[in-house]
Amino acid sequence: MNYVRDAAVTALFFGFFASGWFGWAQERPPVTWKKWLGIGSGVSLTVAAVGGFLAWRHWSDGSALSEPGAMRRYGIIVGIEFAAAGIGAAVLALRGRKELIPVWVCLVVGVHFVPLAGPLQSPLLYPLAAAMVLIAWRAVPYARSRDLAPSAVTGVGAGASLLASALAALAFTLTL
Image 1 (cartoon, one colour):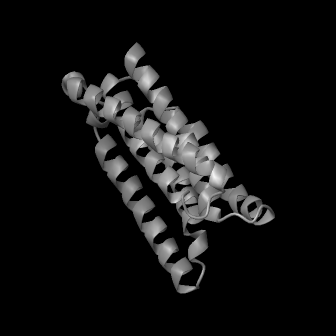
Image 2 (image 1 turned 60 degrees about the horizontal axis):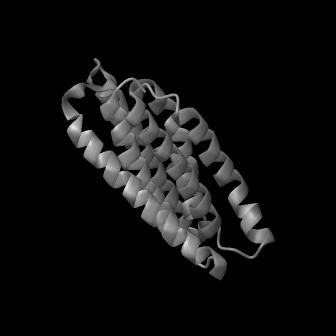
């Protein structure tokens, strides 16, 4: 990342969404996970708040999205992501496979980070993309082998990956 504002906004978004994934993991987790899911959500929201504050403080410092065409590419990629996630979730729900929706969303989110790395000028997105795709790929077999809800496994993995990336973005913010 080349811009403080972009790193701060990344910490804000990833912290916020990490909290959401930890929340999604609350469907039938083992009792021993509940405390850690709450802690993960709290830490994620704290990182999001700090990222939001730093983004506000550095809003006029510039952004990769200010470059010609970057915001348009960003919007197209995110629009395709939302459409793919929504259509896939609807198909899964209609086929009676609602338990697979978080896995599908995780896969779509992971894949969308690859084309976003260019307009956002953020190599941080490549390892996050790989982690999210790997989590989606392994969540169902892992959940079935341990009698867990796929949402619990996917939520923990995605939440932890996003929180780690939010913390890395926050570190960039503080060192740029």
